[in-house]
Image (tube, rainbow, N blue to C red; front, top):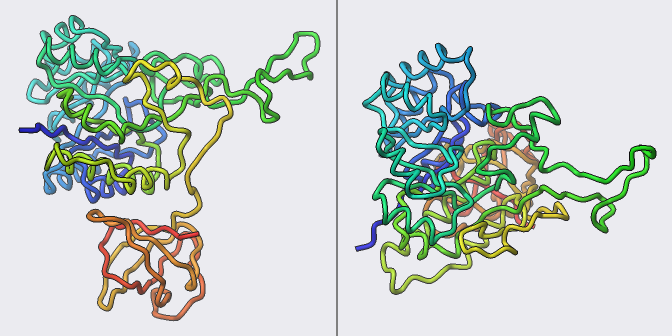
Length: 404
C-alpha cells in the first residue's frame, strides 16, 4: 500500500484559501495579522481566522496557523494572548520556530499540535529527537537536506516530516537572513523581508562612486544572490517513497493563478502515483501547467546533491505567461454562462483556456460577453465583472486564461 503524503498549500488570504481548497489541497498554512514571516501577504483577522478554519474543515482540509517569527522581549505578553486565541479557534496545528514560543504553546495550548518551522534549521535526526521529546508533532526539515538525509531522519525518528517541493527558494540558511535588516531596516525573521537577494548588484570602487563594474557580462547587472525556483513535479515517486508526511508548496504572497496551477499539478501527480505506482507516468500536461505561471528557472534544489541545481539565477530570467491570466469564475448560470471577475483585459473574439479542478484544462471560444445587466460588450476590463458564455459548463473558482 502506498501512503500518500499530504499536499500542503499556502493561503495568504481568504481568496487564496478558497482556490487551494478548490484545486485539491489536503491542508493549508496561513497566518493572522501578527507573528508570521509573511506580513505583506494580506493574512487573516481574528474573525477571518475563525471563518477560514470553518470553511476548510467543511471540506476536510486541515489548517496550520503560522506563529513563526523570532520574537523579542516586549512581545512576550502579546504572544501569550495570541496563543490563547489559537487555542480557542482550534486550527489543526501551529507553526513555530522560536523555542520560547514552543515552550509557551506547550503550557497554554497543549491541545494544539506544534509544527516546527523550517526556520529552526533542523538538519539531523538528533535535533529532531530533541524537538520530539519536548512535544513537537511535526518538523519542517531544513531545505538544505538531500533526499537521502531526509529518509534517514524519518527512519531514525518516526516523527511527522514536512518538506518544500515547489516555489521560491531563499538564498540564506533555512530562510534566516539578515540582508534585509541591514539594507532596508526590515527584518526578514519578523515577517518584513524586502527580498534584497533579488536585487541587482555591481562592484564600485570607493573613489569612483559613479563607475559601476558588473560582476557578469550582462548589461542589466549581476544577480549574485538570486536563486532559481524549486520544482519537484518530475520526482513524485522518490518523494512518496521517502515517507515524507507533507509536501509543501511555497507562496503565500503569490497570486491565485500560480496557486491554482501548482496545487492542481501536484494533486494530479500524487493521485495518479497512489492509484497505480507501477503504471505511473509523468504527464506532460502537469509540467506544462507549471510553466503557465510567472516563475524563475526551475531546479531540484538540494534534494539530489547536484551543485548545478543550486547555482544562482545570475541572469534574473523569468518564465511563464504572466499576462495570460484573465480572472476566475464567481458563479455559474444556465446555458453555460458564468459570472467572471476580470483581472486582465479580455475581448469577445479571444479564445480562452479554463483550468478546472478535475481533468485537463479545456479551451473555449467566448460565445458572448455582456456586462452584469446583460448589455453586450466587446471587452471586459480589469477590476470589473462580466457574464461570459463558453462552449462548456464550468465551476465557481475555476481559473480563466487567454490563449495566445
